[in-house]
Each structure stands twice: as C-alpha cells, then as structure tokens.
Length: 496
Image 1 (cartoon, rainbow, N blue to C red):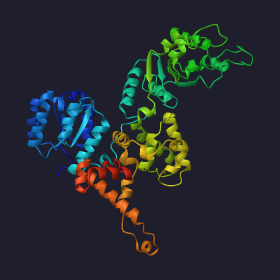
Image 2 (cartoon, helix red, strand yellow):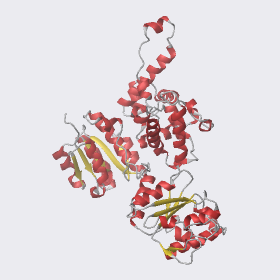
Image 3 (cartoon, rainbow, N blue to C red):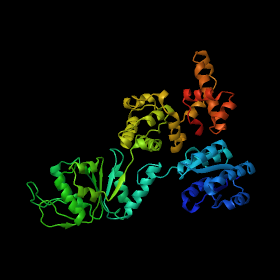
Image 4 (cartoon, rainbow, N blue to C red):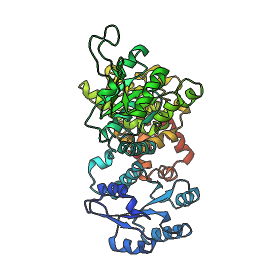
C-alpha cells in the first residue's frame, strides 16, 4: 500500500481551483492529477489509476453527467467517487443520493467540506496519512487575528485585502457590538503600505464631548485655561498611518464638521491655532448604529456619512456564522487555559449543543468572556452543563434541539473530533472490577446503555453514516435506530 492515495481532480476550471489542489496535495503529495475536459476523463482514469476521483458533475453537459457517472461506477467499482454539484441543483442532488455515492460536496467549493471528504476517503482506503490530517483537519489560518472559516468571513477577508490596497479611501465598518470592528480596522492597516506607521484607535463614545476635540486635533499652548504647553492630537499622531474612529455615531455635530474638512482637504487645525496643518492619515470609522437612519433624523451629517462610507464593510453577527463557534472555542480555550497553566478543557456534545443553540447577542466578545470565566471557575477537565451561566440554559431544551442542524454545523466546522471526546468515553465500557462487584457498585443500566451506544457508533461508521444500512447491520428497524440516536444524543459522533 503506498504512503498516500492518488487523486484525479476533474474540474472545468482547474486554473481557478488552486486552493482545492493544495488541499488535495496535503493528503496526496505529488499524486494529484488534473482533468479539465470530459473527453479525456476515462483515459486519465486508465493512465493514472486514481484511488479517489473528485468529479465536477458539470464537467459534461448536465444531461450526460449522470450517464458518465453510472459508467464510471460500473467500470471502476473500487474507485472512491466524490462528486461536486452546484448547491442549488436539487434535481442533480437527488440523482446522486439515489446512487449512494461515497461522498458529494457543493460548489462553489468550501475548504472544510473538501477536508471532510478527503479525511473520510483516506481513512476508508487505510492510507498512512499524517495523524493530524485525520484527527484534526488543517485549519485555515487566522486573518490578522480574526478567526473565521465560513464563506461569509472568507469573503470579508478578501474584501479587506482589496480595500487595504487602496491607500486613501475611507472605510466604514459596520457590525453589532462585540463582532470585532477594531480587529477589522487593524487588519486593514496591517495589510496596507501604512503598516510600519501608527495605528491609532479612538473610541468616540468613551471620551466626553468637551475633551474629544482636543484629543483628536490637539491644541496649542494657551489655547484654553490649563493649556500650559502644546499637545499633538491623534489625527497628527496617525500621520502616514491609520486613525480608527470607533462608535463615530456618538460624535457631536460640531466635531463632525471639523472631521469632514480633514477628509476633504487633508489638513486640520489644532485647537487655538489659526494655521492649517497638512496630514496624510487614513481614516477607518466604525459604528453599531444605523447611520442612514441617523442621517434621515438629522442626527448625523449626510455629507460626512458619504465621505466615510466610500467603502462599507459589514461584519456578520456570530449567530449568522455558527460554524465558526467550535473553531473560536478551540482558539480561546487554548489561549486562556495556557495563560493559567491548565490543560485545555474537553467539551461534551451536550455542552456543545447548548453553546450552538444560544443566540450570542454579545457576539465573539461574549464567547471569549465565557471561556475566560470557565478557565477561572471550572474545576474539572471537562466542561459540564452546570458550569455554564444560567442565561445560556434558560431556553435550552435538549428534546427541542434541531440535532440535524447541530450536526451540520459541526461537520462544516470540522472541529467535532478536536473539541469533544464523547466517543472515547463511550469506548471505555469494560467489565466491572472485582472490587466493584463486591461493593455493589455495578450499574447494569448504565453499562448496557454505554455498550449499546458503542454498537450504534460502530455500525454508523461502517455504513459511512447511512442510517438505513446501519439499521440492517444491527438488525433493527430504521425508526428504532433513529430513536436511540436521538435519545442517547449520539448525533455525528461517527464522523470523528
């Protein structure tokens, strides 16, 4: 058996799929081949003898794609087929489901979905893939400290990179409190040619109105009582760098007018000065308010609004990207456990389900604060439901949880095998010791329950998640199996 599988990547636009090819090469170094046309597909299979075929079903015209698929399945029964289909093509998806394909993914491609498919394929083929590739799929690196692998966050990162290349245009960052607006502003700065100069943050809501002007513009000696010497303002301090104005919606109208001049004329006047000072400062503003609504109500200058929002960026709330919650949890657990010299906690499925069911109105900041609280107060090695704050459990009811939705989130995040170890716990069911028999500590129901869970997980693994096949293996009715999976809360454990 070779050290890694051979993969044939059959896609219409391989030149645009470099990211996919790189992911394949992590699992099959030097063994990834490309096929760009349906005419050469069969000859490529015959010449390269792939173990895995990653097939874009629209490589052929749609009416011929199923015929091609059936021919490959019949002619190459040992070939593991991973099909790629457009996410909105439900008719094609139904045809795939009927054929009980090994795996299929949606297009446009998502890295986590491809990783999961390759992880399953290499495990099934029993190749000697690196342990990290199977146990903990490679994470996409944070973008200047911002963690997010969902498509909406990857799109945001791409937009930040494009915005940063323009050295002067102002940017308006919008998002709820706790979403990380300052991190986005800092990413724009660090990705730009201004990165070696100052990044100067100012929270307009935290500084009293009568002090904010002098903080921003500075003042000259004798400008007012107590001004014993001149002071440089933050606008000037950010010269050739970036000034980040957080919560700009709280800025009073007179200051809005002065800021507008800075944007228009690229100069400012310190308090008490009659001479304008030129400045080369890029301004990034942020707010959680609806500035358009404030403009219509006369609370914010319309001309300043349009100057600030040359390039608007919107950060999605955490509730709209729940697939990132396990990844964020993993990062925060490592950070705060290491700070306190503790081992990283494990998270059982019940706790993970509660966390994924919560609305997170405080967004990423609330999640990190929770992890920090647990790192201080949690005494065990595993976080339990009773360790969570009451607000997280008020509306949590395990019987009413949408387990399919939770399972989908965990699959997309590909962190299920990293964060919790329910399967490991389930697999430790052994016969009671002699002392336990003598002391009357044998719990018959618990032992039977654990062993039953082991059997279900094993059957689901063998059938690659096909519940109908797993029920046949266990000689159970499919409805009985579904009921047991729900009752024992075993959703997605066979994916680890």
